Length: 381
Ligand SMILES: [Zn+2]
Ligand SMILES: [Zn+2]
Image 1 (cartoon, rainbow, N blue to C red):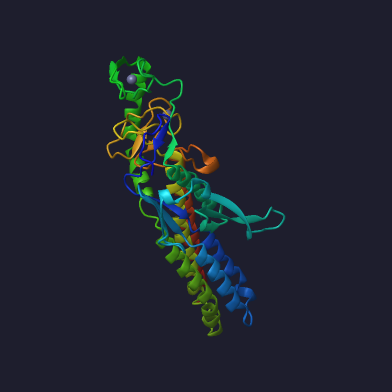
Image 2: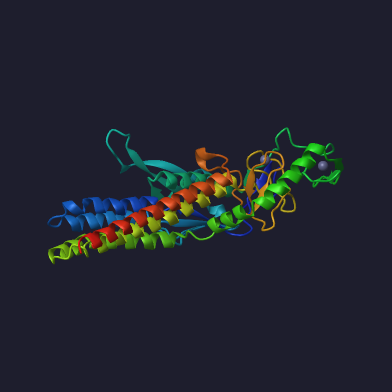
């Protein structure tokens, strides 16, 4: 990484502590495995062996993986490229991109065909998927890896409604006090009453938002690629075994028992879905809600939505509310100015709510499967 003087309008990408982000969510692999179940009723002769071989190969190639970004470079964990590592100096920024392939992921009725997309770093394909959330993580990571390979990211210019230092023009960190000291030139500047009031209001919102902090922390931990891969594999194997087992139970005149093997893959698929949803939330929080880290670590981070400096840091240090626009920013994740594709800025509350809805839906699938199994067993007694 270049260590010379960084122009004032640029900020150096640092990754002082390694940042782990989902690369391949596992969504494409899960869809591939679920598709093999649709083909089970059509099994005859050697056909199932071919299906299992091809689908197993494809699902394995698209299994979940993470990417770890550190001050040295990047490393892939999990998935078919596990262990791939490159130093920032070895990566040409223009060799990092997302490209459409001619491989079909999904085609239904008259809807336009969805093609697979590939995530390329240094002309090596590190991931391939067609799932919409997976492609979104490719795009966000491509933009971040490109910034990091350049060594610098575009700096932050604060919006016009933010108080500026009259002597050096830097954006002022909002405080609830008569005066504030410019972090760059140490000039003492008066704080307008509306700014003080906004800082007080964010302090109140912060106290009320302690639950949200816990939820964000919980979402950012866990949801590992290996967990998804184990669940998808177990779901695939149990699903393939379930049909012969169910038929055997039925033939042995115990129709009730036939339901039991069928419920196992349903529950495993629901569990995989819940973990994948967590990985999607991690990406949305990182690229949609994370505060923009300062060029100089002793300065305040900036708001991802309005680019004003952030003052308020909550007790647990996970969230900061912007005194200028009221947006909640997640601290401690430096993804530069890279955005989550078309999503742009995201509200923390929305990301968490979407994640919770998705997990609730996964539980509903699992419970419905269990209920259907129980009803089947009881009715056949
Ligand atoms: Zn100043
Ligand atoms: Zn803001």
